[in-house]
Length: 382
Length: 54
Image 1 (cartoon, each protein chain N blue to C red):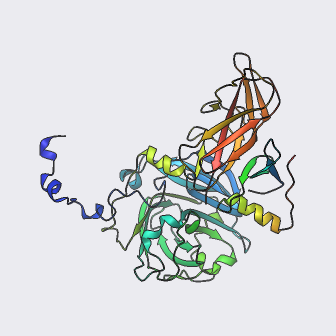
Image 2: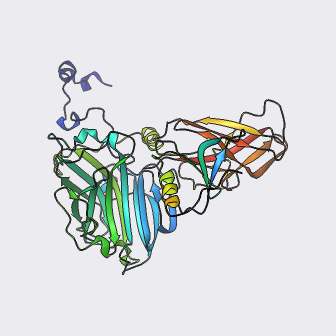
């Protein structure tokens, strides 16, 4: 660094030049993987029509038989989001339409938070803070969508709306939400808040009014402004740069997006999900890349019981659900390796113990081997 | 996760290790903070039964 670049005055006073950066000095973004950079489970999923799906880490797309979709981590190469430093986005493309969803059906994009990470909002106190949510969005649909803050602990809801002004163009939206002096977030590792982008829903979720003040949760208010992504196979929805801030900001006063290193981002994601499959590789792929090889049997080759313990590099939010895979894509299995001889796939893998920090896997009597090969996933999502 | 069957997991001494094997694939801890265990509880509440370990 050239000496002329050193801000001696601020070094002496401790001041930081940009006032926007001192509100949460050195803080990480409240939303994890908000630039959609980490996709541990793979980068493309087709025919998605139900259940919990993560096109990128921490952002869950959950449809309930309301159409079918391709969901991807999209590489950005141009546009205003790209010009603002974002290289990846989450993208949803409708591949099977359902323009008349059943009353109970819905399609939601959401990210979830532990209560202990939200105490800075001071919710449920007389000093409760406002919320500001900002994000980049792009869609073919020029319509109004709805995003909700859903307080799970106290079953309370507040909503904001955003309008896609220009089709197929990245637009930045900034939405303010009021403070809530009612209902504190629990101070623990359980689910307390969901930021949900309600992208489509049946009549159970429409017909109400998007609440601009916190209220007791009512389903009819959660999708009062139906984006209706499932209404046509022409539809798509992309998002990146999702930013949740404490306080009320406009587009001109919003603190700058806090970009993290990929490594820091990945580590934060791994509190909720971890796998030995390479980042971007589909879970259950037939590959030995990244596979764990136990240290070998102290007693030499055996057809008897063998075990291996693994300590997670990042402790999990809670004891995770663990799934083992062998090198050939078989789940609930591992490979017994007779080094220098053969690898026997699809052999029994039994969990012998597990916690937030580690697990042990065993393989009982089977093919002669001197070590175990296995992939795993550990899921502690909210 | 769509649950089809749930079985207890025991250690080599025959003691329950506070984990369940779901659909012969998922090793789910007996931890109410785990969303899959929450699904098991709902599945049991619907009248289903957890199998003993092999």
